[in-house]
Image (cartoon, rainbow, N blue to C red; front, side):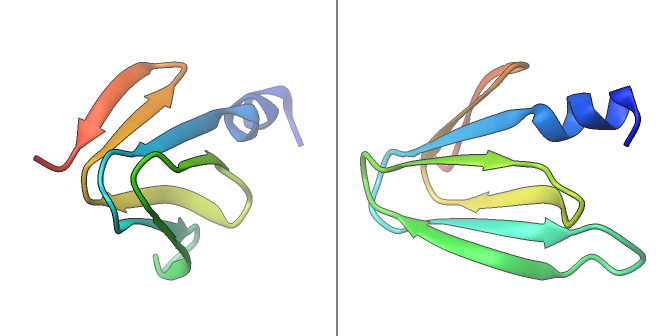
Length: 77
């Protein structure tokens, strides 16, 4: 693995649920994007996620705070 890929895979995303029932969905890499993993968080729970060879995107449904090295963003209303 080259240095740029190690840097990308080394990034973590912190997701903190701000309501019960927040869904976190991991999406695959490759020709066809598919769901490959889901988690459900309740208010106050935190998930620390990382992009990998299999995970190219993360979809969040519900009200949550997302923190990465790029800053903070909120999902939901």
